[in-house]
Image (cartoon, rainbow, N blue to C red; front, side, top):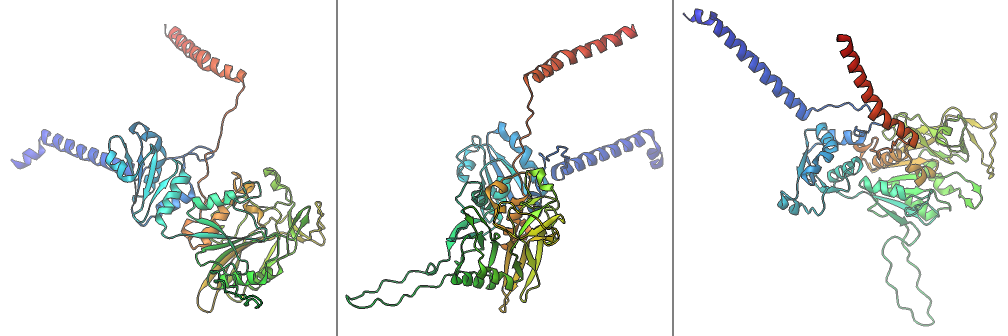
Length: 483
């Protein structure tokens, strides 16, 4: 009897229906799971407008702890934020995005300190940071700040004609300062003048007719809270105590960036040789050549650059430049470097000019002529990354670039070259934050379509008259043929 029941038509149909239902439920469940945590999209726009940058992808996928991004706004505005924030959530299961309407949940908004609509908070459990706007750059910056504990101070040496962080002109460093602060660095200027370090000694009383007591000025030193020391194109000679302070700092495990311009005398601009500082760098494995690199390949003309601004497109495998690949970087008025193996530590080349370049001797004239028989032919090294290992086991790191003009406002704000990424990658390597080295998010490119009034009229007539007329005539033709 049991075998007859199993062979019955209704039993078979019931089993088929049950199996179909199980398959449908499994497919729907799997599809929802994939859509929830493994949402994939394809960005076909030429400027990758709807794709997250390499840095964002690297940071989010590398999360080792849970992070919550909370967006406070009116419910009808959530769709505007989902387009960007959901892309963050799709990269890692450790990042969760919450959308809160402060009018419907005022207690949550008040506890979080929300005062305006569109407020975004990133909470990693270590720190809670606010993103200034609904852009990838600000959100990723807040995410990085929330994951990093402690302060990272970048100290710029001042007092010898270096570039100014407050200068918003084309040759200033105000854009550099802004980029560093967005990347969770704090910037300040330091003076290494003799007697500047330490607290001033209390004045001693002096009797009339008695000689003044001898001065007890403290030797200059780099402040202990400096994570990175930056020497940005000094125009005047560094004194011996100043150079000794920098040397001691690096050899005791400090981190430094040296941007040293070639010795030129053009108009009112004059750069000192800084022989004492050059001698220290030479002892560490990097020799500053007394020349000027000229690029004769003509590639720079695409970006409106002349031969005195070498354009670099090939890089070594060092972590600072590994992710740049074929992204061009420009180095105006740069001197070349010789990199050799130092006695203590390592020295690596970072980037060099093309083979169609020459190292010429500056003649203090706006017009410089190339002698192909005497002048050294490229590739010419313009940057190097080095380490110094002391006898106590401390490792200092430093980077040398043959010009300070590659980090100025006019180049750091350019969309077509990667000077900004190169500078911030250098900072990340010097501060031992190699996990942050990547290509950073850029501002959305303005790709407007500019058309004349005649073209506007043609588009209007085409969309409102000709296209509907073609559809009507096509339908009439089909009806006539079938009739």
